[in-house]
Length: 168
Image (cartoon, rainbow, N blue to C red; front, side, top):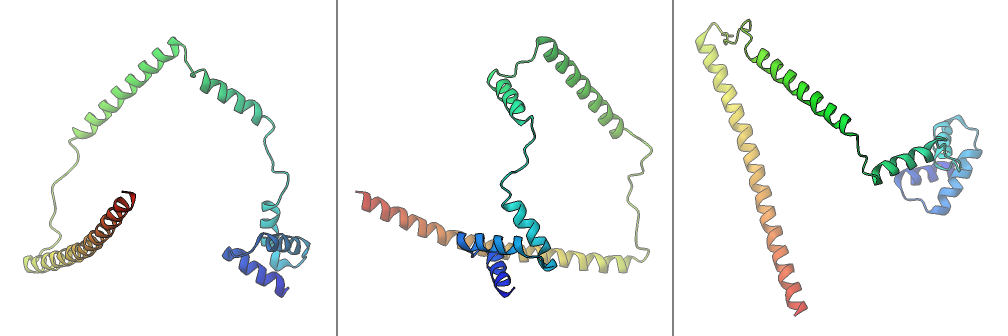
């Protein structure tokens, strides 16, 4: 059991060799311990030699490839039908947009949330200070990134110059 646990740990860390993978598969699939039930299902799915493929997949692939290579041309009637349908859909969307933009029942005026103007001014000041602090924090981070990009550009320029000199 200890061997299975150490191999599983290595497997999930991506550190097993192909031989260890095969050994772990055999150990897991032969194990009857319920602790490894999920691992058994995983290894059974990974190493299943007969994956299930739908029976008509070959015909569907052939039909799709045939349509792709033939250009998938539609008849003229179908193209005209699609033009009319897309035009009708565009007109319908335009009408809905006009209807929604001209509705008059919606009250769009702002309402006061504070009855005390001094409290409103205090909250507004706190909000503006917070926004300013967050903006300055973002600008400082952008400045640091800008400096790092500048350093990287210098290194790249030096590398390109070195490559040009060695090619000559």
